[in-house]
Length: 291
Image (cartoon, rainbow, N blue to C red; front, side):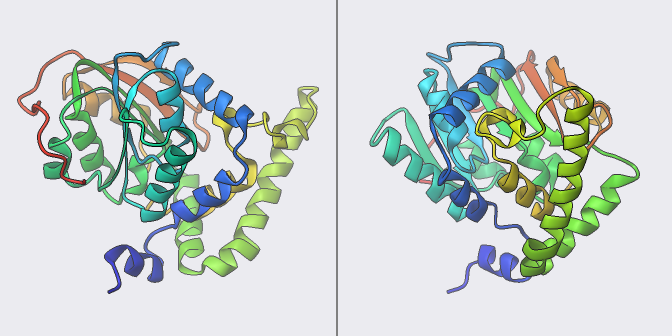
């Protein structure tokens, strides 16, 4: 029987993130893992996560779940894309088979009732995910409810650009409706344009423009070509301004601890909030709804 996920992919209403992550994992190496750990430590401002319960919402490849485990956290990985769940489960089996501190689940960030049964977390991490759900603000509200008092919410959301956002929306919609054309025409054209701009910027700064295409050339252990296809095809697609995110989270009892913006450019603004007010939405752990 065809699933709703399959139907959405067939109709061009959703991007196959998991398939892209599967291809990315074929290029995973110790250097990329080291960079992922470094990125997580830098974002959270903490070298050791021992004793912390962390939810990786939208785990994708599972790379950052693995990084959190290696830094000492007890991790719950959750994703809506079945291929992403398989990627994360496969990574767990390769590096930490049967580790009781790493749970991999299939579930939706929009399913508030099921999420609530997971209990609360010291860290909820969702980098570049919530804006791909089709309902960004409901998704953000749902993950915010899972942060324990004194815990942190670490998120990255696409920056809104009055001129470019509509163009990006059109590009992504077309790439999802016609994925073959997207791979053969849209993604290469976009990569050439972006690559030329980055190369020029590197030359102006006296840097080697080829260095960013090496294993250690991109932040967070990512890969240029897989990043391009993820960006070109990433649908659903929503954006927000830093002010919108700040006001939304402040109204829910959070204080901003760290903010890294892209300065009005394309890309993700990164936020780390701390929950300073206990809400009635807090719940004790219950049966796992996704198991």
